[in-house]
Figure 1 (cartoon, rainbow, N blue to C red):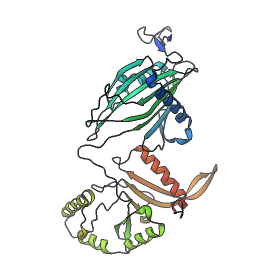
Figure 2: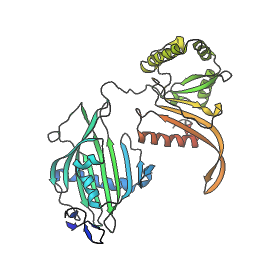
Figure 3: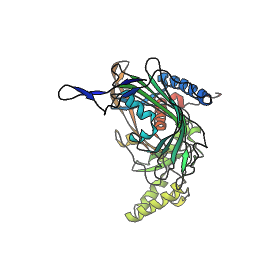
Figure 4: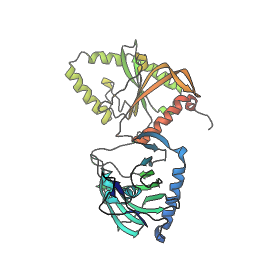
Length: 400
């Protein structure tokens, strides 16, 4: 290894060490022979890291902050994320934060415990990370094989993958659920002055386990969507539930929506409810919503069907004369997403590097984070955008 002493300039123009004489150790190029037991895992993980980081087209940009860009990608059931940015710190300081599990809590406040379980050799070891529970959701822990090396151009890479070693790292289930880290990697490219580095970090993980205690999630037996439609002359609204939406064509959807909009049953029930005192209406609505939305009880007398709001609820606020609107998810509705379809307005947009006026449709959504995380929502938004821009994708190709 080569040594560098970090210095700073005092008021008299003299340069003095930042630390109390403690040298900064720069990792030496190369790596020692890896134990045969883990060599195949490490080399395969390193090769996978290069393939993932070089495949920039598969990553979707989701935002940036303080010079760091964040990306996500569709990768089956795995949660995949990547961050890229320049960090104005000495590469050794950056390296220490990534390589030392005990220091991880300084930058990851959700981490409950981080420690090194076993050192295989100076550049390979086994770490244990345990994350805190969130409300009634059990915590997660990981037993990871960690390896780092320095490439000929001075780039420092770190690769991590979960391994199973119950003797070294016994399970704590059901209190803490063992996760599976498919791949985590960090690539640090120091600048010429060695006072900063371009850092790329990526993680692909499967957060396994079940939700404990009082919350349980069950897959819906069918793909249902509810629509809020205007009734009669448009003075009232009703709910139209489109059952097995994935098996319907556009004509079926139109017929169902038109049938409900021409019906007067829901409007009559709403008029009857308006005769009751406000506190009675509030109590009845909460009870009926809990019975129908949470327990799945059918109450035909008040038009309450089991889970009548389905997995997604849509409404066209453009028909109400609104250019844009946002909705909040109501209590006991058990709805994953609310979609508002706004008015179609002529707007100036950039087409082939030219400004043109085109009719634009705005969709606003409200997502319940209990049911979907950020990467899943990003993938869904991308697919929804493709369908809106290319409606022909909705048509069923017979014989396919």
